[in-house]
Length: 520
Ligand code: HEM
Image 1 (cartoon, helix red, strand yellow):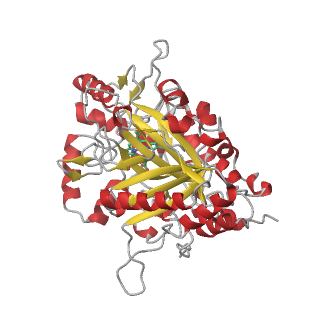
Image 2 (cartoon, protein in one colour; image 1 turned 60 degrees about the horizontal axis):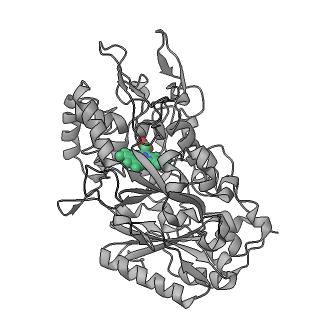
Image 3 (cartoon, protein in one colour; image 1 turned 45 degrees about the vertical axis):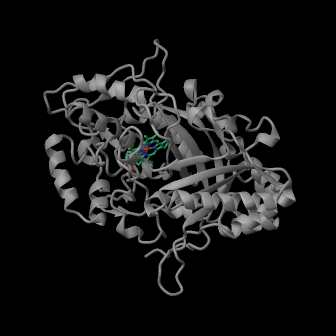
């Protein structure tokens, strides 16, 4: 049994996806540091209020769940402004130092997703020091009124450190308005909160489970790592937290001293606009032709049915879906989680159930990449002996997902407006995990033997007539059906900005605030 992590030292958003813990609204605020000493004093003041990962309870001596949470992270330029010693700064990874905008070619942020089209807050990044994003603060709340309360608290802390930090504006909102913050909230339907995003899919199901987090063994099925005997184990902590052993039995590269990096992690912040009109029109057009109908086609884009997230490998057609839905109805919460997450692609190596270019298969292929040629011409089977764990190639590319949808799709006949997802991905190594997934698995298909086919939902599909995007929806090789070709896939999701951040531990935060980091 692995020892539980020191939850008092780890920021709360690392262990908890707040949306699932009764916080349906959040506000993300970005600051620029104008004076190092006052900036550190500001960090010290915020640190006192930062929410840790400690477990909540109503019993005596337990910490009660707060009405709102506070978390903080830093861009590389921010750490420089706070006077971290040079010998610590050089230990941060190259992509974090460069920042998201400079990594746009790797990320495929071109065309409508290119930085020229990002929200103005990101455009100043690196060009004029005073417009650089240095600090990220996230406020999550139980109710809108409480979110406002948390923001007023933050504004007052900023005011107390006048001349030290300023809140940067420039987040695009409805009707072209520019705001000082990015608001996000769950999508409402008939006045009720849902777990939907704007294309209508149920979201927030699959999140990796790793060693040392509370009750990890209970949720490990389908969310940890697949073992040779068919069981599931939690992933190594070092895939998500610096200063811990990772899946390669190594410590991930991290800055010195150890106290600065241990229990900290990197966070990828991305604001992603969803072209709802284009999505609806494309789905309608192909839904009329697709043999399984529109809803099955929508499920093929993601690998899960829109209404309840039923995974295609378990519910590949209407009949199996009906049975799955019955089982889901009869299950308690833990049973539901297991039904929705506990699956592999072992019995679907042809992609006949869940296509190779579906969102969840591209992003977390589970053990399906360790393939060898089967006996039948062109067939592939799983090579379970390739590594000590069948999913070894994937276990190094997992991402913790945080964030919520933003805006409302007020008029679904239009793409413009202000609606999408703010996604935050936590990982110990941005290049190996997030950037690899984005470059090789979302925008390229080679690992899936899918040539240059991109992931259907997120791929940076080209508007260029010469290079139309396509994706193949495979069929079971034993069936008499033909594969379905999705042609001329339009760009469904566009990047509107983002940055790479470092999320320090509580220990590191105090050291940064006090200016006492000694790398020697
Ligand atoms: C507008 C953009 C996006 C939409 C609409 C979207 C939607 C979804 C949906 C509906 C699911 C299935 C439910 C679930 O498993 O939780 C999902 C899963 C997932 N998404 Fe996304 N997503 C978006 C962007 C991204 C990005 C940019 C990444 C990372 C690069 C990402 C990573 C994941 C991961 C890791 C899973 C879980 C896969 C699994 O473990 O099986 N998503 N997403």
